Amino acid sequence: MDSSGRHRDRDHSAHRKQGIDLVSSNTFGKLLAVTTFGESHGPAIGCVIDGCPPGIALAPEDFRHDLERRATGRTRHTSARHEADEVEILSGVYEGRTTGTPIALLVRNVDARSRDYARIAEQFRPGHADYTYWQKYGIRDPRGGGRSSARETTMRVAAGVIAKKWLAERFGVRVQGFLAQLGAIVPGLAVKGMGDLATVEDNPFFWPDPAQVAELETYMDALRKSGDSVGARVDVIAEGLPPGWGEPIYGKLDGELAAALMSINAVKGVEIGDGFAVVAQHGSEHRDHMTAVGFESNHSGGILGGISSGQPLRCSVAFKPTSSLRLPVDSLDVHGNTVEVVTTGRHDPCVGIRATPICEAMVALVLMDQALRHRAQCGDVGPVSPLIPAGTDIER
Ligand code: EPS
Image (cartoon, rainbow, N blue to C red; front, side):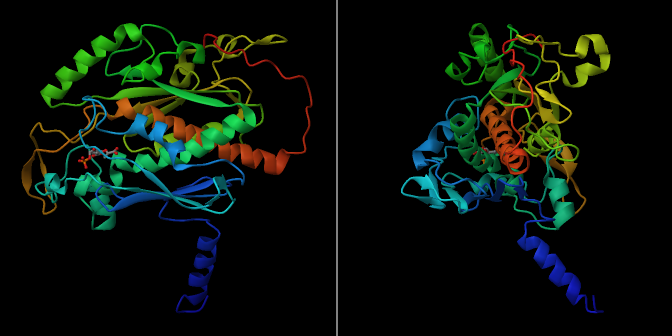
C-alpha cells in the first residue's frame, strides 16, 4: 500500500467483486445470494438472486400466493395501504425457466402516502429505528420508514418463493409457519407438526386453532381502536429435510437461521427447538431418543451440532410491537428539542400477524443455500448408515 492508500482501495474493490465483506450488508447467503434494495416510498423495491440453479420453471404468477399472504390492505387487521405487489421478472428467466444467471425481480410501489410522514420527518419515534439510522448515516428517508419499513420484506418473500419451489421439487421439503402467540393469547391446541396446521390458511392470522379466531378478531378490533400495538410469535416448521445440511462451526444451520430471522425488521428473538426452555431441562429429558422406528421426541428442533438431523426443523420468532402509534408520546427531534410525537397514517397494530410468510421465506432461503453448499462439499458422500425415520407430529 502506498501513502495514498491506492493498493488498499484496489484490494477492497476486488473483495467487493467477489461478494466478500460487503460492509453495507444488503446481501445474504453464500451459494444462493440474495440482495434486496428499495425503500417503502421510493418508486420500487427489488432483489437480485444470484446462484440459483438453472431449469426451475418460474413465472410472475408463482409469486402471487405468498405475496398476498404477506401484503397489507387485505384485512382490517393490518395497515390499510394497498399495494398490488405485482412482480416483474427482469432477468435470469428464459422461456419460463431459470437460466442460472442472476434473477432480478422488481415490485413497483403504487400506494405510498408520504404526507403522513411530513410531521415526524425530524422527530424520533421512541422504539423505532429513526434514531439509529439518523445517528449512523447522518441522513434518512423518513417516508414510510424508508428501508426500516416492513415493506422491505416483500422481496424476501418473493425470493423465498423460488427457494420453496426448489426445495419442494428437489427434496420434497415443505415449509409452513403459523402464529404461535398474539400478545398474551396462545393457541388452545399444541402444534406437534404439520398435521396440526390444516386450517392455518383459513383465517387472516395464520392461527392453528379455528375455535379462537373470533376471539382474535375481537382482540384486534379493540387494539386498533385503542391506537396501541402488540407483539407476536411466529413458529416455522420445515419437514422433509435430509440429514446433513448445515456447516459447523461458523456456518451452523441454526446460526444462519437465527441471523436470517433476526434480520427481519421488528424481530427481537429467535429460538430453535425448545429454545430457552432448555435452561430448565435435564439431559435425560432433552435428548431425543433414537429408535429403529424413528426419533421419539424433537427437543433439538431438527438440528444437532449445527447440522440437520432429518427431523422436522422447528424455530420460533419474536416480533416486537410496532412503534408507529397515534398515541402521543414525548420524545426528541434531530435538534435535541423535546417534542410530542403522534404518528398518523396507515400502520399495523401487530406486524407479526403478516410475518408468517416472511419467516417461511427466510427459512427456505437458508435451507436452499445450505443444501447447495452441502451438495458442493459432500455431494459424493453416500449413505453411511440407515436413516432414522424423522418421527413427525411428536411432542417436542
Ligand atoms: C410500515 C408502515 C406502513 C405499512 C408498511 C409498513 O407503511 P405506510 O406508512 O407507508 O403506509 O403499510 O407495510 C407495507 C407497505 C408492506 O408492504 O409491508 C412500517 O412502518 O413498517
